[in-house]
Length: 271
Image (cartoon, rainbow, N blue to C red; front, side):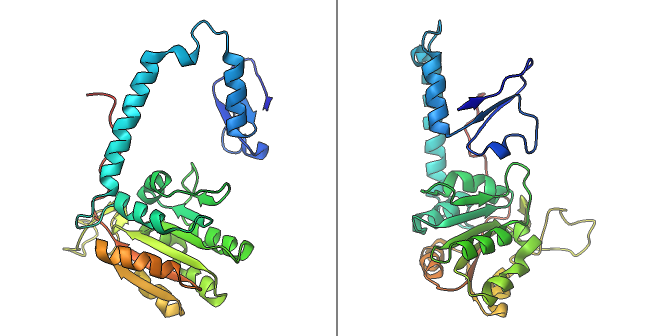
């Protein structure tokens, strides 16, 4: 572990890659090293403090209680198969079928935020997303690069419909080179939220975040020569996910979900 100190400290950051420590903001206390090793060293140095962390039972109790509440809430959401489909159920179901060594690409707004909680990667450096700056449109490029770099591993790109719109035509590259990529487009008809149907074409009366409802992104894949699937309910989802993952070449699953976006996933600390 290496620690750099300056006279006034406004923020710290821990990263295994030294070059990432100052990429998008000034870091006054950069910590470079493996997270578990660094935190272990910090805890060892904390021994002898007037109020050791492990004796602050009241504080720990509140944290544990909050964690348990949030886990129960998210678990309930992940089991919710109601129509229209919701983010947590769809993403956790995808996660259930992923190969252990799959390379996961995740981008979008709600899709990426909720995906960080529900899409499990078991091996280090097997997950790529748009990062803290939320740079949308990187998903297809990430997926193609991953498939070329690791041709014997499954690459899964889980992207929102608005994110897919930035670079969706790059699926043609995946088809052209027969890359083992499965794209899951989480389609809620918009950015954050959309509309279940367009009642007017008047731009002054449409939500600025809306996209055309139920767009058939799966047909883009089939038009290029890959395999496309269209999913609207839980039974189809359970059937199609393993089928799409078993494709040797590129496939795309277009999953229609609730257009109104997610409900809060974290228990508020204020009552």
